[in-house]
Length: 268
Image 1: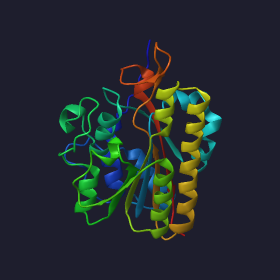
Image 2 (image 1 turned 180 degrees about the vertical axis):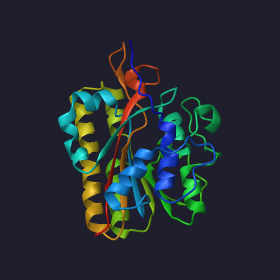
Image 3 (image 1 turned 120 degrees about the vertical axis):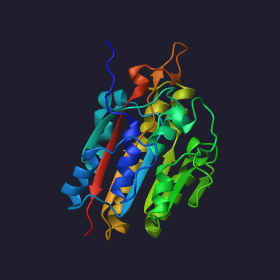
Image 4 (image 1 turned 90 degrees about the vertical axis):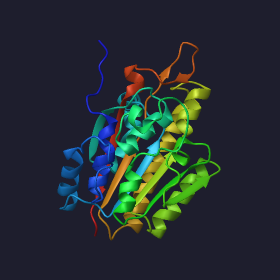
């Protein structure tokens, strides 16, 4: 029998909002106590001054289970590994729509692979209303550089992954944003081009993991004055299709079961 994780990705938006001292997005599922507990134990309070959400695309839970040793740099900077179930159809704009609104696809309005601007309340909206600054860093054609446009926040639209990650490091050094969201799609692209466990794809997975570790080390250096919440937070999983390439969008556990990793770094 197929087994699906029981906690929906829709709980994350309200959880991050609460961590930043903001109200949940209007349509969001309730926040998870696990993140508040993590902050309280790690920082002595239930809120953070800074949140860095790193969004690598298509990192299935089974990849963590099969290649656990690859993930050691993520585990070194996090304390909570959270099994989640993403939404259907399990494609990027639909899933990121639910991740940052906390709403099911029929509520936020993206129910297929299209990239319109989401109009309902999102994590970005509620963070901005609370007087905080937010930014998204992504490549130009990515879902995350399109579906949350038209907010009074900072958008850094880059030409490739390397530019995205360099800009993100610059922003960490500048320490101007309360919520910083960084998207990388190179594992997903490599998996579609080849297959989920090809050398190309696994090298991209390792690159995502090392990128997150690099961001965490930069946070250690430049965000010392803040209580920080870090997230390694993917959107959906992946499987090998009958044609032999990487695919997703189905209700298979390989596509729906994902892992998020969260860590706190107390101010010093």
